[in-house]
Amino acid sequence: MRLFEHQGKALLENCGVLIPKSQLLSRENPISGNLILRYPVIAKVQALKPGRGEYGGVQNCLTGEELEVFISKHLFRTFRGEIVRSILVEDLVPHAKEFYLAVRINPLALSISLIFSESGGNGIEHRMKSNPSLMKVLNIDPLRSITSKDTIEFAKEFGFEGTLLNEMGRFIGQILDAFKRYDAKMIEINPFVFYDNQIYALDVVMQIDDDAGFRQSLSELVGPVSEEKPRELTEREQQALQIDKDDYRGVVHYIDLNENGQIGLLSVGSGFSITVLDILKNQGIDTANFCDCSGNPSKEKVAAAAKLIMRIPGIKAFLFISGMVSQPLDISAEGLVMAFQKVKPDYPVFVRMAGNREEEAVSYLKEHGIKNAFLRDVSVEATIGKVKNHLQRKKKV
Image (cartoon, rainbow, N blue to C red; front, side, top):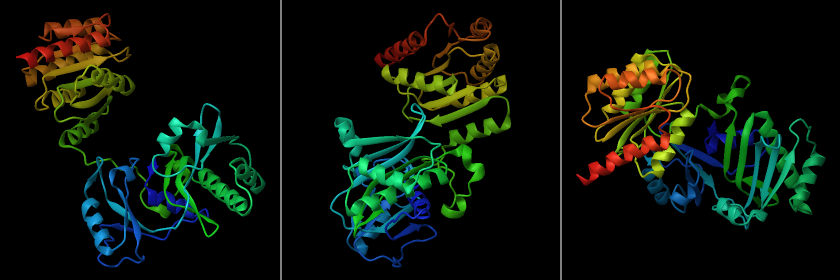
């Protein structure tokens, strides 16, 4: 679960990390001329997607008028698909150089990776990609007890010496303390800076382990920590949630993707479904939705999901597709036929079955008017190719 910047900073501050003086503006705490900070300040939308600075979500404000304009532009509005519910306003910390530090779980090395770069700030991902030598990585045994002597050695490894060495060692220790104390999966400080021989964390990305929530009381420190949806649910997404609630058998995971999508998609298994989306995209097919209906759903649940998708305005085909699955596909076929007979779509329905009772499923579909039904000997790519051929013929007409 990824925390908002102000939440991550609150946790780090609780571990001794210095952060700029700040004020969080929201519906409950609007500015209304009551800013406690002195200008100039820096204003930042509180959003979970990266790259806020590149998309105008971060701005230095020299006056109250500039801040008011920034707030009116972003607060309670959509920023890169997310609704901005708060804006963090902070003191500007003078600095000459920006640094990068991250701590994250490294599952391949069975360790905690401590990552440092002297080239922090915006665009660091691109710089590191083109020049990996900018990044220094130390792998730490997660069972090892880290001492202040160890963190000083880490700071030396990163090239620090003299008066800055002890401060950097202390900072590393504080970040590692927060990482373990709050069951984090990743903490990224980009950038941190030196001001008056002290380190300030200017921006924080923090991801915590959901599975460790039972032993944490983070809401007492930072407020609600349930990761917010990037946008409000659409009407169809709300209907899909209700389908899931009304029938405990199996699951329906539904997301609207593209209001101009050419096809409606219903598939089995989230991982397989994402792969199908990639194949469709590579074939130049825009999909209106994502929907995984798996976990042995009832025929009624499959029918409800299929009807929801078949009624998406403007789609030119419907595709049900499965990889190798254990759930009985003849039940899924019954649900598809129920939806097909109810909606009576004026576009073709394509079905590719692979798994338990696939032959019975395809036979049932064809008996009930769904002629474009295929077994596993027709590959996923070939099935999508048939959909593509239909769309191209439709386009010519």
